[in-house]
Image (cartoon, rainbow, N blue to C red):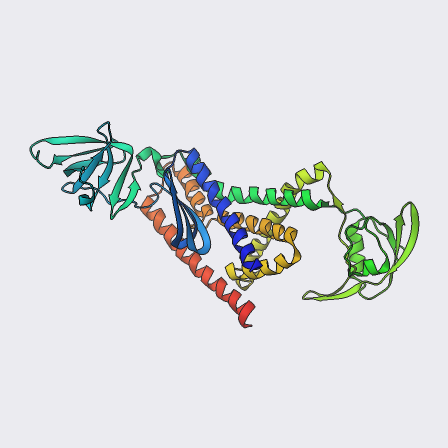
Length: 420
């Protein structure tokens, strides 16, 4: 149960902050945001406030922010259609009812001659009982269209995504991955505040209660001068020597309370996929100074960003197999393992996943944020946007291929963790 809760919290936080980036910059640009969704598929929770519906959906494989003008949203009102209009106190249309008109007894029924819901915001037509008089009805910018009892707010052209400057559109799309990197920086900074920042000094940090260091009598804060007569300059030197000598006695020369003493230590043998190595159960020293802590988030995020990009490069060159990729099942299993190690490890795992999500979304693949940014780059070079239908088709194909990849990766995860 703890794993399920941890997975839901981490997944929800990563997707929320990613989509919140899109959401906040869309709002800032004046774009009408119709829906802020966590997950895909059928809705399991829905809440509407102001112009936006906030939903949680069944399939935990992502999320989306649906902005006005990105997809066909409303039934087109054509000449000859009969609609019912509800007016506000200023005689401006606030509701356009396409069917179920009997639910609105005070509405005025009009046969449409002409309608413009994007630019001039009007409906021209003949009202019942006044068939000889062509009337023009002004529409509110916040008017809603009601069809099958569902309300959809109209989106004047200046509230649609496509109406905004290229820079505003690009920033709205880039803001999602950007928020994932910001979240990682915040998480790693909090970790630094709680436990300190690892430093590479030849000093012992926290001692494991069941490790060889504890059994031998080493103390946290001991300054290691040499091991078996070999001088050590940093903590990496200590790690390298210990790993190379499993179950072999080593003489640690340490400085403690201004005294130099020799302590024999026998590293325990640890067996892993990469082979056997020695462990003594000691962590690197931690620095909680303001300078170290305040920069740790940025440094850690940069370090792991470079590492993940390097692994992606290996995937492209064939050095890294697609079978090694992890989907939701693999992430869940890894979360279970990390959760057992403690909250700080779980926080670091969340930071790594956030960086992964940010990088993956910036890849120039159709349907991802990076694919959309690529189209914006082409638009900047051409001086005009690409046909929206053609771009939409490319993104649709890209999304279908991504879903296929998700299925393959998920099946690999199931085989790896539950079958093989």
